[in-house]
Length: 240
Image (cartoon, rainbow, N blue to C red; front, side, top):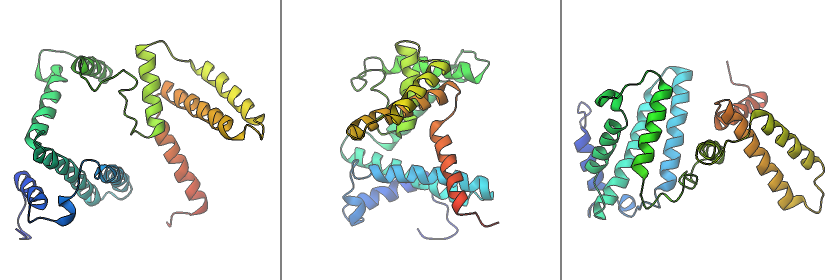
């Protein structure tokens, strides 16, 4: 199995993971659970994003290939654990996502018609909404947005969905006014009220800034990430 000239197939990869989880497999892999692997998935997803950045910087896609494999490993590990628990298999996962792609692209696989990416997203959301109807794990439109998302990303999604499902959100001018009030409150925050009051004021500011970014279709997460890089560059110049 270790021939350098051999290219492993998808099916062989599934068998490798099954063997690692088997009775004579790896002691570490055998004891993993859905919960124990949660940090691994987050780390591997972050490393994949880093590999895309590295590719843009260097033009070398080797790291991206490796990190995509690590993300796939996590997916297959979860599917293998689920199969052992009698829940579903990797084949079920592939079938499910394939059906979803066909269902959500009626303009490609059916008789639908769209002209712009915006129309595609509108159709996607409508089909997704219909799919989730009566699903027991969907409690409400806003609570359906995962807590596990980074806070700035989640804030933008909550604000956008609240705007659609409940009532129109703030305008840019209203957000600026609210932000100014938060700044004024920050200036006058007393030492006695420092703890919780400061947290509340800063939380309001994060939400207001997230809403401004949302209105301009900007990623607050990416904006802050870029600014952190600028800050690091200020003190630690990248070698030319």
